[in-house]
Amino acid sequence: MNEIIVITSGKGGVGKTTSTANIGAALANFGKKVVLIDADIGLRNLDVVLGLENRIVYNLVDVIDGNCKLKQALIRDKRFEGLFLLPAAQSKDKNDVSPEQMKVICKELSEEFDYVLIDCPAGIEQGFKNAIAGATSGIVVTTPEVSAIRDADRIIGLLEANELSNPKLLINRLKQNMVKDGNMMSIADIKEILAIELIGYVPDDENVVISTNRGEPLIKENNSVASQAYINITKRILGEDIPLMEVETERNVFRKFKKLFKLK
Amino acid sequence: MNISHLISKKTESSSLAKDRLKLILIHDRVNCSPDLMERIKSDIISVLSKYISFENDEIEISMINSISEEINNKNPVICANIPINKIKK
Image (cartoon, rainbow over all chains, first blue to last red; front, top):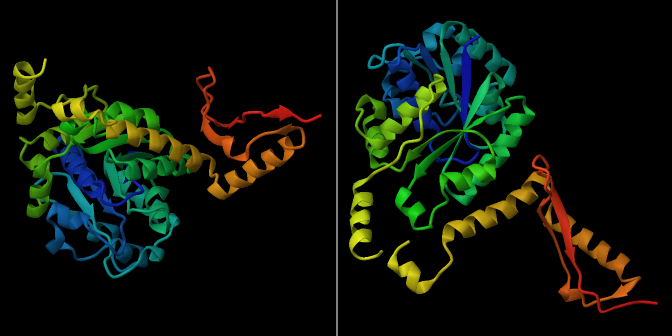
């Protein structure tokens, strides 16, 4: 069976959907056949981030209710060969889906796709239980904030209790300048607290907002730091051994000059 | 570290965040409510007060991370700091 990865976080707004979209697009760019499942029934967003919102005909709940075949609900992304989306229903709610039904769908998709990525809703209720039911591994997204890390810790516990052992950590929106000033927890700090393996980090980057505005995954234009970060994370998912990248923003260079001349 | 930090000597907020988080997670992980902690505290006090006298407000009972040498032992420990006035006879 191929890999079925759930991307989850506990707290909302930390970048699950953005991460799902970009890792999915990058996997497809590396020649893999990928399907992204939006498991956030009632609050779908993955379609918008990918810019596929106008092409939805059927959705996840239609498949479950038997209104259409699984293949009919899949939307092919024309920009990335091999990338597909199974959108969530917008007019239903999380209780219209059961973990057993999700397991069936995930299994069926994994027979045809190299990677199945599930975009998990925030929270730990029914939607979370549905999203993790069919997964074979998990990525926990957090930002370097007390609230997000606390929720991540809870999610890690719940994943392990549901036999999804060894979830990987993705640290999003890291501000290297603030870390240097001692005003943001570092990667090492977060790793020490959560004690799980790091799959990578994504620096805070305005290009993420711009790409979401446009409905185009970042990795379509391969020149931003966030885009490079997602490509590195994707390579690690594919099993490559890629070292963590050093972020050298303009401000950092400027800072180094300042340090040279003013402070010792 | 920039100049304003050197002047103000304020604690770095990241280490503050880390310390707060560690404490929060200790309680989250064992699922121990502040109410339960209070009850444990008052029971310990009532038992000890049979044998020793002490000032109630000098007592510190809290849950902390295990400082044991065993690497695998991540379990928290209850740590009680009770200055003794005198032993009752």
